[in-house]
Image (cartoon, rainbow over the protein chains, first blue to last red):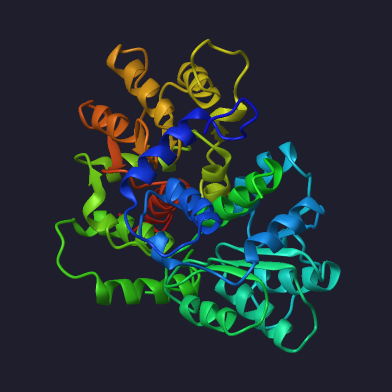
Length: 207
Length: 207
């Protein structure tokens, strides 16, 4: 598995071998498993094998969008930090962090939500990666429902106890390419792992 | 719970109420639970109530060190990113990221490990926060064993499948104030949550 051109550190390949041995039965396709395995590597939480949901062709769509240098919009800086190195080694996609893209305040809205609304106007076909803020995911879904923009792909994995289940349910009901984690779990490392797995699939010509 | 002076966003307080309702029986002290609850908030993973281990007085020691503006040394930038806002609102501790503090290459060592070894010379009494790199934690423990430095506190929560259990086992055997997560779980959000919980305890004069 560890070819000289591999973007994965040998320790990552070693972890993947251990995960392969322990994973047991699951319903993911081979490509979906490539994504899930990286999430499990980042969290040591095998539950993600059942939590991750992929809309049809979402991986193909994500890989093509990354190869086309589509901008990646993250909700928070921790997600950005988790992908910046691999993006720099591969397709150099612009990375925009919503919370740093706020030029005004909107009453009753969080800063991340406001930043994402501004991004949705500036980058209507971007790849949107939500690892933290359910309010941001809800706002994105509302914009899509109102046909105000149409991102290439949404990675929807906010984490926590308030509005998280609702935001993921709303995402699931929207006809947009998506990779999401059901339930309360998720987070910046999960979001970063999904983007990094897609980058590696796209770069190493595995598909 | 949500006083006007609270550093916690109302959504965080709301999450804490939900966690309080669902947590059930556990063996943590009231102060330890303050830390654990924030970790659970960041991960939506209740398993941490059993995984987190605190050496005697580690919370007191951590709170005092933070109040004294002791430098905080993180292994990776994602941990830094997770604490930088709250540090800026409270004690303005210097934050040093080991992986960005590398001035030389040491054969057979990872960059994070090399950076941490350099930090251990520059900041012998720092608060060391390891959210990712087990090699870095192993190197720190070795330095302490050889009495080369004596940090104020180690937060040892690397995540993953290779060397992680070994690094936590070595930390557990060393007589240094510590907060650690047993098993394979951990990560940057866990590390950041522990630091942020300590900062809030320290700032809001709850102890």
